[in-house]
Amino acid sequence: MAIYYKGIFFLAAAAFLGEGIEVLVNMILARELGSHGLGLYMSILPTIFLIVLLSSFELPVSISKFIAEKEERYHRNILYHALTITIIFTSILFLVAVAVIPFIPVFNTYHPYVRWLVMILIPVIAFTSVARGYFMGLQQMGKIAVSNFLRKVIQLGGLFFLFRLFAFNAESSLLIAIGTLIGSEIVVFLYLVYMFIIQFQQLKRQPFSNINKKVVRKNLMAVSIPTTGLRLFSAFTGAIQPFVIKAALVHSGMTATLATEQFGMLMGVAVSIGFFPAFIAHSLMIVLIPGVSKTHSQKDYPTLQKMLQQVMKLTLLYGIVAVTMFYLFAPQLTSLFFKSELSAIFLQLLWPFFLFHFFIMPLQAFLIGLDLIKECFIHIIWSTFISFGLILWLGSSEGWQMNGVIIGMNTGSVLLAMMHYLTVCKKIGVSIFLKGAIPKASER
Image 1 (cartoon, rainbow, N blue to C red):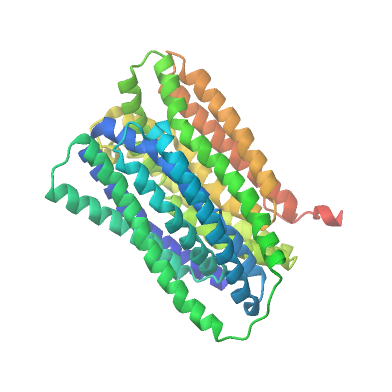
Image 2 (image 1 turned 135 degrees about the horizontal axis):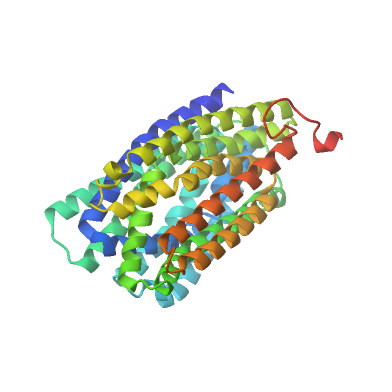
């Protein structure tokens, strides 16, 4: 267990600094772009993340899982086949993107260069994913931590110096904001690929054994395809969520401009602050996927039960402290972005959304490691369907508006966390109160 704690510590420490930088990034964006510009920036991010997801093909998850389950002598062969798959997949995806992205209407309100900047991400993310997955599988979380921190530093530095040295109009400011985000990904790509090449050269000098190409491809695809489907659905719903929320608000009687501004305050201020502690949940998720996969492959259910107990206790501890602080100091925190009482109210009302989201991320890592990706997918579909339904129903009401939107978001988060938790408990044979084990399904 010591290696897992060490990995969590490195990731959490770097992520803590990174999240602090993220707050500074959002403060710069809020002041330079304004409430409407920030709303446009937050509206395009889900679409960019969707393209990033397709480019990664969830290779960090599948490679880390396979590497963790196999002996070191097989790693060279696994990576060789993984790189071959990546080259083929990236080439096809890039050609499709060149043909399709120029005609995607969501980019029409942004600078023309934004489309081409997004295309650069496809090969960058694809090859970064191979290196990231390999280091995750080896539990070399220091490299992952450095890359995550490096991304934030480059983005902050780029925004600070460009906006300080030059004056831009509204359209160009948005281009600079998106460009620095993509530029930071390129720097991470250069760092991780460089470290990967060094590690791979060392691996080539070690004794190795071959695995049949079909076996490697089958194992990688068995995780990548359903996990990509899961992430794709989440990314797709995330991409349309801004339009769903703004459409509901407009239907309730708001003007389109006011709806965009309130969405900017919701996602760019309240959610940015509320997700600050999520760096711990994200760190847990990265470490748990290979950790749970390896432990599950060994059928070590007592260790899995202990891991779940520790993760739930840690998440509950920091989660309650975090949402309490957000609730009590919401006006002071949101004033760092805008002088708006609405942002503070949004932050206070969203406490269930944040708290249960902290549980969702490590629980998803358990589901992936336990080969329960299908169940995870079903949970997300149900929670999203109910959440969007409530957002449209209550958010469209003149008496509810953004309060109705927040109720829908809170409900979806609580429901998803509970479904994940009950499924994991049943699979590893532990009671829902984490007090004493119950017989596993396979032993009944």
